[in-house]
Every structure is written in structure tokens, then in C-alpha cells.
Length: 317
Image (tube, rainbow, N blue to C red; front, side):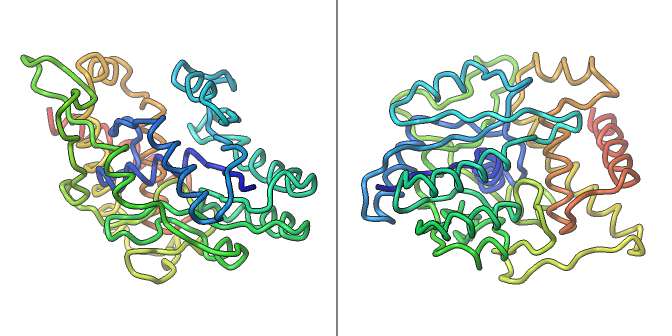
């Protein structure tokens, strides 16, 4: 038997980068049931074994599932495992749950092959511990715009027993860019029945220059666009370079949000100023962190990023 362990933060933010050029999850529409079926099918193909279960690791406010997460948890052979959001909008407890499950399930002989959909360096030790108990652990990566593995830690690659990518056509059919119609037209997020899905155009936003997805857990993250590990920036770098990086990220995220947001969401963003909604703030921090190849952004950089977001918002009005 094989079992799947899906880090949803990695899966969806990486898929969003492929579709829109930014990790903003609200910028994409996801056909969850079809995507999960495709993940199971791919795991069975990779392992040559039937799948016993798919574990779905995501974050929720106070650890309470939202309606979409409840529907996912009701799918056959899907186990919903929830962490929570921290004050900074980052997910908490997800990596710990994945790591504990990998080790516990390996120790109990729950399956012979584990398929891990994640790129997080923090899972390296858990992968190695699971292997001690005779389990094979194979990484299943999200493809980037060039159809290469996206945002995978080199430490994790070295620890795993193999690396494969999810078929690009699977993502293009199940994760599509949301573009709201003009206010005078009926609004619809998903493609209507009988119509082809909106195709991802990952280069349509200005300044796209990164290949990461969710915040990396180590500076040693594989850059599928270049095949090299990114250079870690230092506090002594040119402030003009930092300003250009911040501008690139802000423009991408703000453009993606405006293309996908309903009138209500746009009104809520304006009314909540100067607070930035959690999903937008997370995308800003994630994209800048990945672009700079840094594990954590300093408070100074975070402040400049958030300030620039509202400046760009006002400039575009």
C-alpha cells in the first residue's frame, strides 16, 4: 500500500504561482475533488501500489475547518489534518503534524511507500526517521512554469528516496486563474459547464522574478528556474535592490488580487486599511521571502513591504 501526505500550503501556493505569478491563493479557483483524485492516481502510478489514504494538511482559524475543508474531509479515503494560523498569517502546527504522522505511520507499518507533497526543509528529519522503519518516501513536487520541480529544499531532496512532479496538465485543469468580469457583468469565479477553463498565464504580471511558493524553511531551496540554490541576501545589500524587489512583489500580489476579487472583497480591503487581510499579507511575505531566498524577513523589511503595499494601492486608484 501507499499513503499520501499533502502539505496544502505548499501545493496551492505553488500552483497559484504557476497560474498567476504570485502565491495568493484567492487568485485561483481549485477543483478540489478532481485535484485530490489526480494526486491519488499519480501516487499509485509512482508506487505501483493502491493508496490506503490521503492526508490533507491545511490551516484554519482556531483549528476549526471552514465549509470547503469540511467537504474535503468528507471525501473517501481523505483524512483532514488542520493546524492554525498564527498572528502573522503563517500556518502553525502543520509541519509538526506531517512530521509526527510520517514517523508514527512508518513505525506502525501503515504503508510501504509514502508520497510526500511538500518542499519544506523542516520535514527532512521526519523523512529520515520514517526510512529507518523501512518505508520509502518519495517527493511529489508541483511543477513551475517551466515544468520543473518548484520550491523543494535540497536537504529534503537528498533525504528522500525519489522526486517526481505532478503532471502539469493536472494543475492546468484543476487550478485556474480567477479573473472577475467587469462590475456590470455577472460575476462568476469558476468556468461554467461546457466552457474550457481559463488557462494559466504565469508571465502576465509585471516583474515576475521568483520561483518559490510558500515561505522556505531554509535558504537551501532548489530554484527550478535556474537549477541553482539562491544566494542569501545580507543586511548590507543595496537598498535600491530591496526597493525593486518589494515593488515587484507588491505589484504582482495587488494585480492578482484586483483581477480575482469580488466588489465586496475590494470594499473590505479599503475599509480595513491600514490592516492588510491575512491572505494578502501572507502572499506578500511569502513571495518576498522566496525572491530574496531568506528564511525570515526582518521587521524592518516587513514594515517597508506593508507600507509599500498601501502606497501602491493608493497610486493605482
